[in-house]
Each structure stands twice: as C-alpha cells, then as structure tokens.
Length: 169
Image (cartoon, rainbow, N blue to C red; front, side):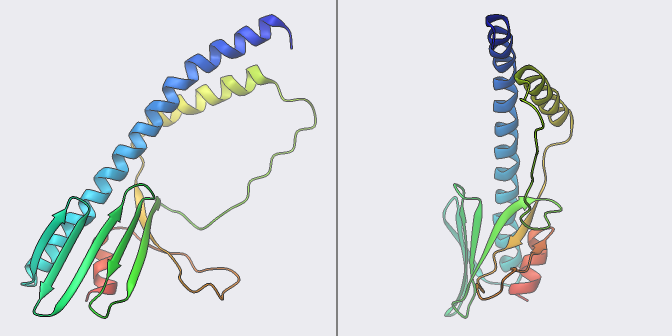
C-alpha cells in the first residue's frame, strides 16, 4: 500500500470513529430507555394488582403479596432481565433488535484483495445512513433454558406487558 493510500485510509478512519461512537451511544441510550420502561411496567402492573412494590435499587423491583414475591432485575452490562416468579422459577429475557429471528451466519467471499479505501467509504456511508434513521427499537427475547434441542426456539415479546401476561397472568 502506498503512502497516499495509507493517509487517505487514516483520514477516512478519523471520519468514521465519531460516527461509530454516536451509533454506540444512541443504541445504549435506546436500551436504557427500554429497560427503564420494563421496570416501570412491572411496577405499575403489580401495583394495579394490589401487591406491595419496592425498588431496592435502580435495576431491581420486587412485588410482594403476603408470602408471594415476584422479582425483576436488569443486568445492564449484558442487556438481560431476570424475572423470578412466585414459584421460584427464573425466566431470562434479553433485549434484541426488533424483528430478531435467531442467530445467522454471514459469509463474504473476496475474489480479489479488498480495497481499504472503498471499504472505509462504505462504512462511513452506512454509519451516516443508520444515524439518519430512527433510533433502534428492541424486543424481549426469551432465553431458552432447554439446551437439549439442537435448534433452540426463538420467542420474542414486543413489549413488557406481553411478558407479564405470559409469566404473571
């Protein structure tokens, strides 16, 4: 690679870096909003059903009626909720991009040496396009605890009310 190409690539990478940081910050903000909404929905749902609801920490809500207790905890580092039901079972839910269908494998074949300038320009264009769209939205993915299946099922919920209807009717 010649010096002019190296300089051009570095200049493009300087343009790309702040765009990537904006995308990361926007995604984290959207996840924080979704998590806060779930904790609020949990709180309101059980309060409406006359449970005593407490929030011992910003990421944990408990709902108690007599000796029956439900707990919702959010682990922000891994974007996961743990919902403990009155039977003591824990349901794990993860925030995933809306419309998630399960893990996929992407393959790219290069028939010639990749062009770093063209790739950097494409990355910048893609980042700018993503920033011009609405902030990302998320579903709640039920983490399948049944590891005996060769292909785990993918169950998503569009909002936390649907999670509560399923596991806390």
